[in-house]
Amino acid sequence: MVAVRPGDVDAALSRIDPLRPVLLLFGPDSGLVRERARTFLDKAMTGSTDPFGLIRLDGDEIASAPARLIEEAATVALFGGRRVVSLRAGSKNLVPAVEMLLKSPPEEAVVVIEAGDLKRGAPLRNLCEASPHALAIACYADTERDIARLIDTMMAEAGLSIDRDARAELAGLLGGDRLASRGEIAKLILYATGEARVTGEHVRAIVGDASSLALDEISDAALAGASPEMAGAFAKALAEGMRPDVVLGAVARAGQALHLLRLSVESGVSADRAIEGARPAIHFRRKPLVERALRAWTARRLTTALLALDDALLGARRNATLGPAIAERALFQLASQARRG
Image (cartoon, rainbow, N blue to C red):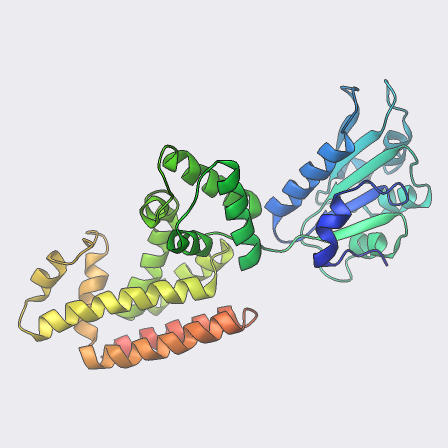
């Protein structure tokens, strides 16, 4: 079995193994699949002067003509050196072509296969994991450590430093897709060029825009008791790679802001005036749900709800596997309490 363990991935990709000329990259993080493939292809092409040394193949075309993969891998490079083949899987079955290739592995070529999220037991994954001539590397969504390392590396390459709070805030907005994360960090670096340090204000101004809108939608709907809207926004956020604990943290902050507004109302200030005086200002599109939430809660009930949110947040951070379920349950409970209010 040549399935590469997560801790050995960097070492496996750092060298070209002539005994294992076939590399399968797969997983739910398509950006990470693409990034690792590009890095490995560049390494395989190092030293080559052949402008035709890299061949890119379409998986569906190869599935219809399996022998072509062997032909391309066996072709001698025009100006000598290593032949490099990049194959991106499509919707058709690649197994027959790859099976033929592994039975007669190339001696002077490297074949890199990019696939989607192949579950355990998928034929292409099983084939490559069982072959002594292939490496199979799973590409899962970045962990907190991976994201932190990516931020630090890109900031160092740009000659910038980042505040600790800003780094934590940025990390909470990244992670669904490696290339998307790189793009957001690169955008932040460009925005902060010329500054002494990257601060939380920079992060919120550039990276936080789209994410903040999504978090506001979840928070406002949950606190106003709008369960269907909350559920839809939460599902969309998870699909885009947002972590459940980040969502709960945003809802807790929104609840704290609502608590301050509610205290003002209970001290005699009108709801309209309290909302108008809120800092930061509440966008006009949010006002209907904020007004609804303000009517749904008392300060005392909201304090109890915030304590329950804190417990859920801690649970989601301690158990990443159950994080989505913990967060969803807490949000539905919050919306239910708002409706009862």
